[in-house]
Image 1 (cartoon, helix red, strand yellow):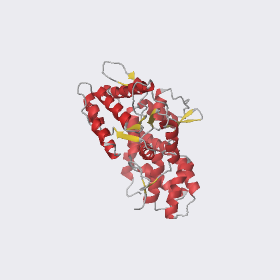
Image 2 (tube, rainbow, N blue to C red; image 1 turned 90 degrees about the vertical axis):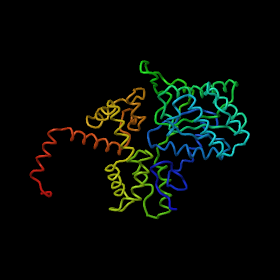
Image 3 (tube, rainbow, N blue to C red; image 1 turned 180 degrees about the horizontal axis):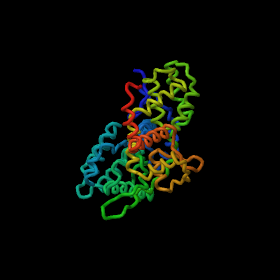
Length: 388
């Protein structure tokens, strides 16, 4: 089956054209996994987190780690009570153990029932027994971990991980060798609203996590590995280096945008010579004209955060320069969502695609809300028929 560019779900090397991430994967293993670090991977939507975890899991299994790969994507019912969370995690981990052909005795012990009175303590005992008896270093990775990060039950789960980690450091317990939690938000600094009458509090049980400093956006050389593979199969005659550079100029290496433009070039663009600057411009026009999940999410985020929207409008229309300081909450939020970046110490929109999309969005809103614009448009229709 011919490979395709992928912009939904996990990219599979055998099925999809994709950037070669093998160096990044090994870098993560060398810098974080081997030394037993607990860390969070927080990046904007559709930034390649799930694909990275998939490839990391594959490589860790080759290196004889036992990997427990979970996701909170569709796990809302887990957070109804401590008991349901412990039971749900126990079932998910059982699936991972069976898939990796763990010894039946280890499986049998893992399947002991969860204590109804002390479910978290019971889960902690299971984890210790598993890590002690499976004969391998155990790595826990959870994707979409911030889906349910605004409740006390999630906080209790983080507290369990922290307690076991600290006891393990003191030689009093056995636990996961490494823990990786991935999501949009950095759960080390998420505020939790436990009860309406309480003030927000920070998510301190995760303060054992180290900073994750691996760059996940694509460089020109990264994009080139994907385009080169495509060119080897299709023989279009394109200038691979030049096309990779132009793609980077428009996207600043945002993974979804790079793959989406390539997908449009492969499947939709036909009005110009495709793998050229003109072809990329044509694909960008299609991308900006049609709805997609990334732009839908952008609209939703700006509705939810009017102060961020106002900052973007001031940057784009008023030319206001804001000093770049991640400590400023609204700037940190813009970076978290992937909308903002540091450009020589000044806050800037993160790439040309987003910049154009935001211009179009704000101008459209202005036109719809402007009574004079609406009046002129309605009068115009009285005098123009069939474009004349």
